[in-house]
Amino acid sequence: MVDKPKEGGRRTPKQARAKATVEVLLEAAARLMAEEGSTALTTTRIAKRAGTSVGSVYQYFPDSEAIAVALVEDRSLRLAGAAREELRELMSAPLQELMPKSVETLIDLYRENKSVLIDLVNTDPNLQSIAQTLAAELLNFSAYQGYLRYHLEDRDSENLELAVRITGLVGVSAARAFVAAPEEPVDKEIFAREVGRMLTRYLGAEED
Image (cartoon, rainbow, N blue to C red; front, side, top):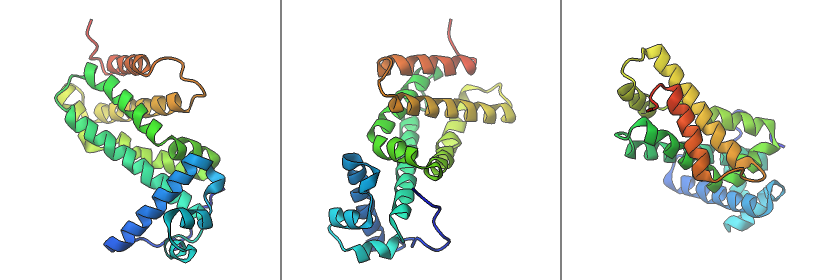
């Protein structure tokens, strides 16, 4: 469905008014996706839902495919930002508390953004690649590295970086798979607790 946007094909908004317009268009696209699926993501339908003209849409996006890409980028970065805020609030918490809580938070975030980050992403390999690339923002942000460095003082830098990548990848993948499943196999709290326990044991911080 989606081709990679051509160089210069999508206009990057710089002024506040332009940014606000793009946000309105993306919100309209997100609502259409949630209500009717990816087939509703046409420039005409998006313009109508946003209460603007098709010409206004084309000022910022060359086609509906570019809107889909922008929507996945926007929701991926929002998810990463929300996860960062959650971590900041738990910086002093022990690993045994942080790990399951983080998985639970990721599940909630994927639920909130399921129509875009799971349903829409699954329609096209390019969107999957974009979402996976942006997920790196979640896996490698400095706050999480700082948290593990504080709690795992005996790890050298190379092992610490590996721990960040593995625990981040497992946590994000597990949360996404849980939400993407046709039926949730267990309660969210139980799933998060068990994944969190697995990650804590991997980090060598599980209490007897």
